[in-house]
Length: 233
Ligand code: ADP
Ligand code: RBF
Ligand code: MG
Image (cartoon, rainbow, N blue to C red):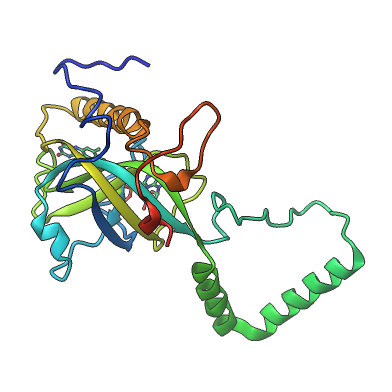
């Protein structure tokens, strides 16, 4: 793929051997609502993390655009979860009698239990989630283009999601710094730069010194050498 690159930015950050000190950084939080500016409509949804006073990491990190790995603890009910099982459709499906009996029982229990058991189910669902790793780009700072007065931390996960994941636990392994935040004369230039950031992350992280071991080996690839165990613990 060839992207417009008017500023002649490099596509690879750092040496092939892997992240350089002080990287990698670790961060963790639950995905919250952001500014609601319609980043999703621009094709660049960003999962926001809380930036409060207790979160000392955010105070101590320079503003800018970073890249690395994100891990999401997707509940089994999320369509992208590896544990996800499609809900029964309205079409009649053939079922084994025992399975049918169990399902009827479960449905009845749900009706009898009311709100309390629905909450219980949500809790169990969140606990039963499984960490899933994706490459990511993130922005930390004041978004000069929007002149924010509060500092934010937002992550664009490089993956396709069939549903939102607000409230889900997210862990980050930040492997490097891409660039400073910029102001732009128009939205298009901002979007073009973000698309380039995504490509920088994809290509930089594809190198074996930067790929986390926990992703396993894909055909034609060497095993990653970066320790990502914290992302799935
Ligand atoms: P908000 O202003 O609430 O952050 P966005 O338009 O930035 O709204 O959308 C962010 C939400 O979109 C995330 O919280 C997440 O639930 C969902 N989402 C879907 N795909 C992605 C993705 N690839 N990266 C980040 N968030 C995504
Ligand atoms: N906002 C800025 O004002 N300046 C930037 O240079 C900038 N770079 C970004 C890079 C990435 C990878 C991401 C995910 C966001 C960036 N943002 C930046 C934040 C952006 O303005 C915000 O996500 C908007 O909501 C997008 O419409
Ligand atoms: Mg957002």
